[in-house]
Amino acid sequence: MKYVIIQCPYCGNYLAVPIRQKTKLCTYCGRRINVLRARRITYAKDGREASAILRALKAKKAGILDELYGRRGLK
Ligand SMILES: [Zn+2]
Image 1 (tube, protein in one colour):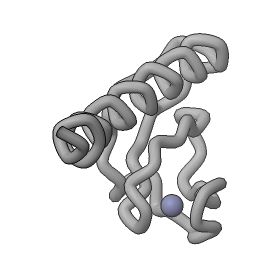
Image 2 (cartoon, rainbow, N blue to C red):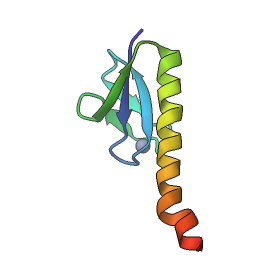
Image 3 (cartoon, rainbow, N blue to C red):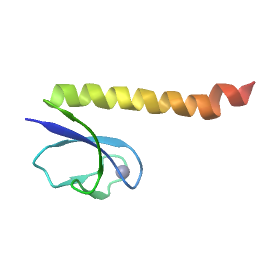
């Protein structure tokens, strides 16, 4: 099953949704997302690839936040 990686419009977290699914309950903020209207980041060919992409996106996001508010602020 193919997945689409979307960004929650309410909290900004990334979520993997099976491609035919039209709505998704955000696992972070609990709000219902209209998948068709949400920002699509990319597609994955299966659940395994989808979770790998999510991990990479979260790491990237954490790295950017770290750069903006973390190390630089401590200097
Ligand atoms: Zn959310």
